[in-house]
Amino acid sequence: MTPDETRREAHERILPAAATLRALVLRVIEEAGGLTCDEVELRTGLTHQCASARINELARDGFVASSGAPRKTRSGRNACVWIATRRAA
Image 1: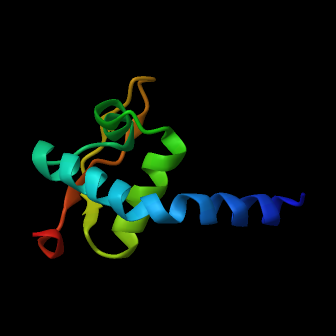
Image 2: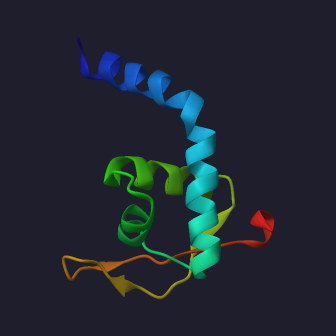
């Protein structure tokens, strides 16, 4: 199986749950007033790959945006704090 085939298969498998997972990620970001991807992972139990993908989809669609203020992750690195936009309201 090629990397493209693997990627396509993974995309097709997550598609039915993606909307529900996006809603979950958006809800925890809204409730907290802003979260890093690391914090979303901790609050939801999602893997980094899943949380990051859902945040990127929400950002692409205009439901979350960077707050402009970084926050430290568990590993001590700076990370973007995502906040809900007016579009999410």
